[in-house]
Structure formats: structure tokens, C-alpha cells
Length: 192
Image 1 (cartoon, rainbow, N blue to C red):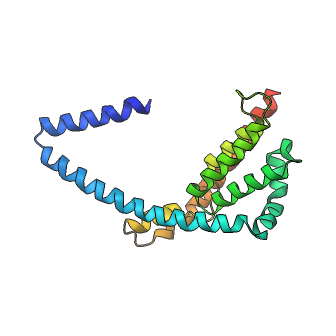
Image 2 (cartoon, one colour):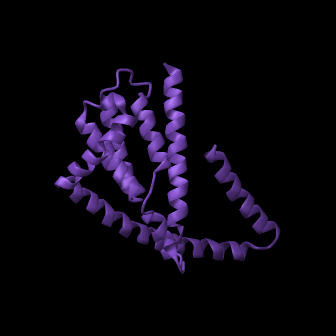
Image 3 (cartoon, helix red, strand yellow):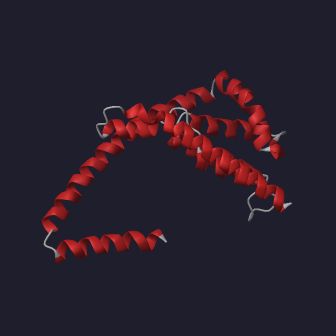
């Protein structure tokens, strides 16, 4: 669908710019936007490298074992079929911790790694397991205590108070996670 919508928007933009004589303004906005995109990308890249490095260091220390142990009751509730698989539990807990810290870019490779591990044990490779569906929902909802990516974006765009969104982010991500997990558990129960 997006393969249709975005080209359509681009064609319409160029058409209106030509029809109404705003081609010069269109060119200026293109160059200004590319400069802003590069600046924003560099800011996000720095933030992403910092937190990916911290997560890599944490993965090789006892901190991850302690955090995994702390998240074990939550993981057992969300992923009851993985109670015996401590390696996948560790991967899921690292993914959850990265999401909680607002490190969506660091959480993505961790989530992919957990999904690959679950897929290896999946008896029907063409159908998601309940645990895989739950992990997708958790990653989409992504409860965040420190929304570092959003704060970095707001900071790079000159916000006077880039951290003012923390409390609304807590509410939104918590509500999204509760709604997503509830819906997933209900669908899993009805699907049996």
C-alpha cells in the first residue's frame, strides 16, 4: 500500500509545484530537508551507537543475569511455553530492557535474535507460535521509561524542554502494552 501512496504524494507534489509556479520553493525545501535529515541521522546514530555499546557491555556482565532474573515472573506470564528455555528468556529480557530504556534501534536486533531462536524450535515454520506473536506485540507497544530516541530527536530539533514528553510516553506505552497483551492473550485463548 505504501508503495502506491508515497509515489502518489511525490507525483502530486511535483505536479502542484509546476502548475502553481512553486518549483523554486520545492527545490529549496528538498535541499533544506536533506540537510536536516543528515543532521538528524548523525544525532540518532550517535545515540544508537552509545546505547548499543552499553547493551553489548551489559550482555557480557552479571547485570543481564540479574535483570533477566528480575523479569522472570513477567516473562513466565507472557511466554508460558518458554519456561524451560533460559537462553530465549535471556534474549527476550534483553529486548524488553532495550525497549524499556527507549532504545528501539538496539531492541530491534535483540528482538530479531529472539525470534530466530524461537523459529528454530517452531514445529510449523509457516505459522507464528504464541510466544512469537506476543513478542511482536510487546515490541510494537514498547513500554518505555526513558524514551531516548524521541528525546534525541526533540533535542536535535531545538526543543526547549525535550524531556517534557516522558510522562505522556509512560502513559501511552503502558496503555498500548496492556491493550496489546490482553488482546494477544484473548486471541491465544480463543484460538485453542
